[in-house]
Length: 307
Ligand SMILES: Nc1ncnc2c1ncn2[C@@H]1O[C@H](COP(=O)(O)OP(=O)(O)OP(=O)(O)O)[C@@H](O)[C@H]1O
Ligand SMILES: [Mg+2]
Image (cartoon, rainbow, N blue to C red; front, top):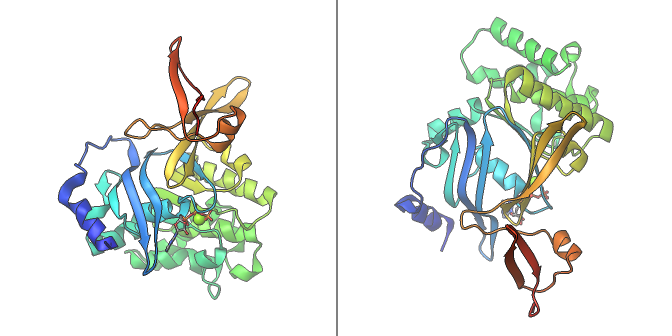
């Protein structure tokens, strides 16, 4: 069985169209991604259910190989799911025609990558880099210049407009990359480890910039990161494990400050995934646990036959 075959199964209607809520920016419904090669198959996403509201800033964390980049690439329309549906602003990406998909990538989504070499053309100045994506859209030279300068102002790089990327620090390059991603006024910004190649102080500033853009422009932002201290600055943190959402942390504001409550996420079939660390702390080994309801609480404990 190959990928095309899997997609056909998908098209025959395993998933029915649902009513997607108004406030939904991104809605992944049972997304499966299998990478096929001649000799192997890798199941990068294993029935991922994932939801982002319009105007939310969320962080995605998870071990290497857990499927974070795969998820972002799917949402960005760079790859298609093997099965399942992805709705962005209410539109089902799996039904878009090629031309619609090109428009979608250009206008709805802005991407920021970890390596600035992937974000910026080295032979163009900062200003030219920000203007470059605008040439695919209508507009005069004056309008492009004004918008590019406005975006560089927004990311605090207007004074460096005439420099080349090599003349900037890693953090400055990433700020320009964010301006480039915003060139065509996308409603969603996707960032795959945007602070992976900069020091902690710079990473902190870049994170603050994302939060400022969310407040100033109402952008929906999804940031993949390895850095837990940075992830704590966003409203919601989603942990991915083995191609599925395993836990979510949601920020609550209190007069003493803000903190995150952590929740384990149930999938559609009410299955939940327990972290290795939690199992270790509870002294649970083996493949069986005992589940009981005690005083209205679900208690999971070591089974006497946990082999
Ligand atoms: N193009 C591809 N072909 C084959 N396998 C792939 C491809 N891209 C990703 N994979 C596999 O899919 C799984 C998920 O990869 P993914 O890149 O999404 O992980 P990740 O969570 O982003 O990891 P990292 O933190 O290291 O960036 C991994 O097992 C990876 O080897
Ligand atoms: Mg990755």
